[in-house]
Amino acid sequence: MEREVRWGVLGCAGIARKAMIPAILNAKGAKLYALASRTREKAEAFARMFPCERCYADYKALLTDPCVDAVYIPLPNVLHAEWVIRALEAGKPVLCEKPLAMAAAEVRDIIAVSQRTGVPVMEGFAYLHDPLTARIRELIASGVLGRLRYLEANFCYLLKDMSNIRLRREVGGGATYDLGCYPISFFRALTGAEPLEISVAGRLGAVSQVDEDVHVRMLFPGDVVAVSYFSFQSHWNTYNVVIGEHGLLQLGTLFDRGDQKELILDTDTAGRSVETIFTGSRYALQVEQMNRVIREGHRPAVSLDFSLGNAVMMDSVLARCKDHG
Ligand SMILES: NC(=O)c1ccc[n+]([C@@H]2O[C@H](COP(=O)([O-])OP(=O)(O)OC[C@H]3O[C@@H](n4cnc5c(N)ncnc54)[C@H](OP(=O)(O)O)[C@@H]3O)[C@@H](O)[C@H]2O)c1
View 1 (cartoon, protein in one colour):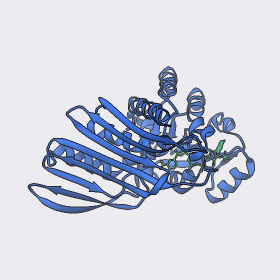
View 2 (spheres, protein in one colour; view 1 turned 30 degrees about the vertical axis):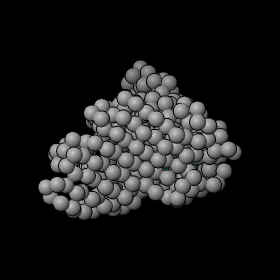
View 3 (cartoon, rainbow, N blue to C red; view 1 turned 90 degrees about the vertical axis):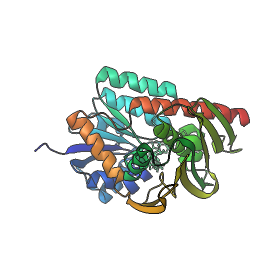
């Protein structure tokens, strides 16, 4: 039997603690091997929570460890492209948190290095590995909703803590990178297309100078309209709606963490039904998919082309936010 994929993590991030290190520990065929932090104390404190074999006080050292088979990057957004490229150059396959990079140009740099080195990289959109997403895709493909007409996806919460990386411009803050990447990717994943038109009403925070409150409307081929609101200035809300000619899907939360979620289906023919779907394993499913990429040469479920398309859309949204600033 092949040995486990030995994962190294760059940075003692909140998402690593809450979701991704537990997922590495739970995933089949994966092992937490090394942690790296900017400071030794932090790395060691993390390692007391999550025992592993190596603890590094700088990120570069982890990348030169020959026993590390794969690297997970949950750093602030502004550091993603740099550390993805460093890891690829060191021959380490990468799972990098969303957004993969700060701009389409950076994603193109990542693609070039991945192609030259032959080392794979995947953007960490855990919801795209979620059984709930698979069920939504299955229902749309079954034709039960009829022709798609309208998509809606919101992701908002009130954020006032100016020390949070999400409100700090210099580390890649902003609602589009943090929240908007989800609805944008959702619309593109479900339609399998790029929008023909996009309109944006987006405001920069007066103090943060990052986009804090954004409303987007996109028109996809086939006259499918997609609408999203993502904001750090609103009461918590996240939901998704998919409407076709003959039915609709509604769900409370797809993008947020949570162990089980309800999917409402309402159609002309079958009426209304509610399915409860277990979604707690999605981060582990993401790790297992990356393990198959590394061990069996599978294609990443989130392709670099898909990430590039998302980055192009985020560039477009952000350019318009500045216009409205
Ligand atoms: N997929 C998801 O569900 C999900 C959820 C939340 C966040 N995320 C993504 O994960 C990434 C991290 O988010 P987070 O909320 O976990 O962030 P966080 O808790 O603030 O952690 C970021 C880590 O990056 C390291 N770091 C390096 N340079 C830094 C700097 N200049 N300022 C601050 N931290 C720095 C720090 O680790 P050391 O000090 O140990 O080096 C820090 O702990 C973001 O890209 C975010 O979009 C994904």
